[in-house]
Length: 233
Image (cartoon, rainbow, N blue to C red):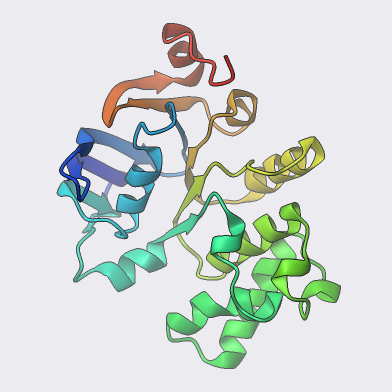
């Protein structure tokens, strides 16, 4: 089994208008490691995440547990790599919380009974009580929506979690609760965020993107200091 969970080499991607969104990106992610993805708006963070689960397809090479991310391998890649979008509403579209969490397992070929069991476990793991299982997702708070979206991914038992700006729309108690939850999860994670305080509680290594180029890969504190980067300035 490969030493690294994720390996990215020479990844380049052009937008439909011809502009280069990712420019020769290379990095790795070890097993049981959290990697923080930093950079200003438009730097390519979300575009990079969408390549890691095969939603977008640029040139270069991406491997997850040695398996190349290609269209032929997408079903297996989607089992290994789960993504939680910045806007939880983009992932919540079924009539009830339980059905939303069952959607992924059903698409993996599990029986309805198996999918419900997997969804029940995942929802319990993220702290969603049974009183919410039959509730429409749009009636939930932002924090609850984030947890349900995460549960829908965890129900598929991925090896790698991709989180795009996970603190968006969360108040401070919600952010604190999310940190506590993410710390309990065994999966390796790539977390795109502007929130340095949040990032520091989850990972010590970071990569910094700007205009589609990877400018730094190393200690989170060193990168923040080197680029004197405060997205709220």
